[in-house]
Length: 190
Image 1 (cartoon, one colour):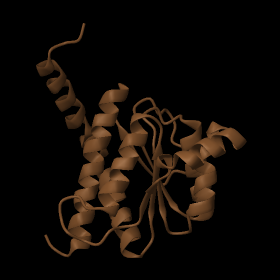
Image 2: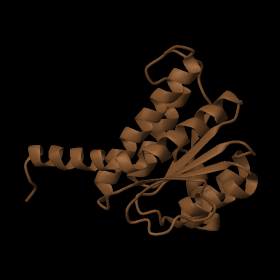
Image 3: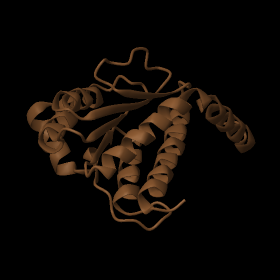
C-alpha cells in the first residue's frame, strides 16, 4: 500500500536536498550548454521510458521557450523520432538507436546529453560514446545505481538516489534549472 501524499512530498524533498552534492556538476553543465548554444551549436538529448519523456520536454523548452522570450534554440530529442528509432532498432538492434542518430546528426562542438537513471542503458551509453568520438561534449544525467562513469562522459550529474521515480523527479528539476539558466543568458536580460 502506498504511503500518504505527505510522506511522498517529504521523501521528494529529501532527495532534492541531497542533490546539493550535484550542484557543481549541474552548474558546469549549465556553463557548457550556454557556451554551446552561444556558439551556434546544438543540443542532442536522449533516454528511454520516463527519461525519453524528459528529453522531449527539455528539447521542446529550448526550441520553444521556457519562461522568457528569446529565439528558438537548436535542440533535438533523438527518442522522439519513432521512425528512426524503430527502423534503426529493427535493422541494427535497439542498443544502436542513439548511436546511429548521433553519427548522422551530431558535429564537433555540439553537446550530447544522455539520461539514464541507472547509468547502464546500453543504447544511451553507445550514443554518448559515438558523440565523444565525433568531438561533442558529452553529459550523463543518472542516479546512484551508476557505479562507474565511463571515460567518454565529460560531465556526470549523479543524483544521490537509487529509486527510479525519485531520480527522474530530480532530473526534471535539474533540466528546468538548466532551461532557466539558458533563458537568462540567451535572452539578454536578468
